[in-house]
Length: 198
Ligand SMILES: Cc1cc2nc3c(=O)[nH]c(=O)nc-3n(C[C@H](O)[C@H](O)[C@H](O)COP(=O)(O)O)c2cc1C
Image 1 (cartoon, rainbow, N blue to C red):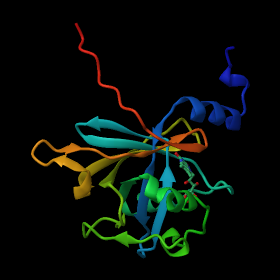
Image 2 (cartoon, protein in one colour):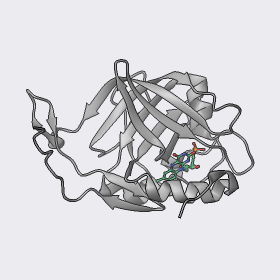
Image 3 (cartoon, helix red, strand yellow):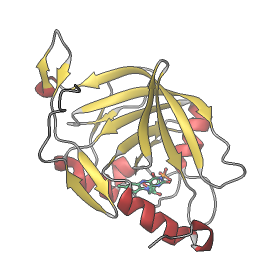
């Protein structure tokens, strides 16, 4: 079967892509508006982009009324975000924080998500996450007038919980991330070593 994307509605394309491009990492993004209201929301159209400059890309859609999502609004306003990586322990809070709220409401307050300030000039991390990236807005990508806005963010520093560091000298890390698979979640499970290329 070959599916012609030109014949498919946006929701059908989303369905197919989200079930096939898997597993996707989840960026649990903390941003603040100019008044300091903390916003927390998950995004799985998300990936590492380059190590020079150290960048990641996250694709942000729009609210049900067509207006910009709070994460995009805040990033445009303050240029800063903290991207938390998610483990299984945070599944429920992360999922709840995807609820569409008014920009003046904070997911942290509504869902009792505890946060902790690590670096003064960046939004806080969610308490207990294995790692988080402190990022600045680097570039907005224009998908030729699409309502989806891919944002490139530059990593300035990374928080790493001591418990996931297996070798401090070599900066070796080990943790079990929660991934997005279709509309479900998954853990990575078995890892396979690469074969030696002859
Ligand atoms: C696991 C997960 C992944 C998501 N990924 C995306 C995404 O990549 N892009 C997007 O626009 N919305 C995504 N969403 C929906 C947003 O989290 C949701 O629209 C949220 O209300 C946005 O919040 P904000 O307006 O506070 O930024 C995802 C939701 C979940 C639960």
